[in-house]
Length: 353
Ligand code: NAD
Image (cartoon, rainbow, N blue to C red):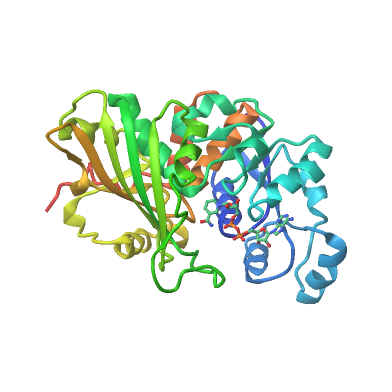
């Protein structure tokens, strides 16, 4: 059997801790360790899980870890040297610094997150849309939560019917559940006021030929983003044909009306019901009832995106692509989906009441 891919997690917050757990669930990967700047509840939990903890800026961090009684295995540089690939989940903008100061110097392949500019990596990634472009690359960026959700949907529809023009309104969560600094806590913020928002151009870093306009606003919620998506299609499919095309993709969860999921709170509650780690919904949550083909052949839909977790499976596929461990994107997605139980929200095999 081939050696397992050795993965290091540099940055262990909202995204990093989820990617670390997902790595642990893959049969072909092993976690070298996680890097933390200081001891806190996440470090406590990581230690309880048996993850080796390495210190970012050890001179400053070591005494703090020592007094908290959390053992550290060395510096994040020590960790990265032992790994085949690093997943950088440091806060927005620090990935670029880490590239210059660490990965370039150690000549280590790295995956960046959506908070970094496309240019930091030169390749932006979505597993369904452009897996092949990441094969063998040294640096790749997994696009943001919103862009990931859009790329999945847009790619599925583009492949099946062709897209003349996509128009998207994004209603974005103000912050993550553990984030006290962001907002708004009252009101609705056009963000940005000028059009388009960055999401359209970001989709084009993965799917350059898609003609897309996006507008975004922020609202006081921590439970998922919501997209309203309208597309003018090149072909004129029936609604059933569109549903059949979407059902081919386990990362697109078509919520049947009889689930009675009325809003993002219900969707997250379903994550709890299904025993998902941290209640995560890694799939696009698409309201099947909202899938509409109007008389002019325009496609309309509502989808919710769980900002904390939808990029997790994409990071796992990106690891396989960059290391060359799996050259077939569909096979990688299958492995990832199986390991993370992605697709088990889909009711197709159930008989509706
Ligand atoms: P976070 O703040 O929750 O976690 C970042 C972690 O990195 C923290 O534990 C922080 O202490 C640590 N850190 C700080 N400096 C570091 C350094 N120099 N080296 C290593 N670690 C360091 O952030 P997050 O929400 O997980 O975001 C990480 C990246 O993922 C960003 O690029 C962000 O834009 C992107 N992203 C976030 C979300 C989301 O909704 N939270 C969704 C998709 C993508």
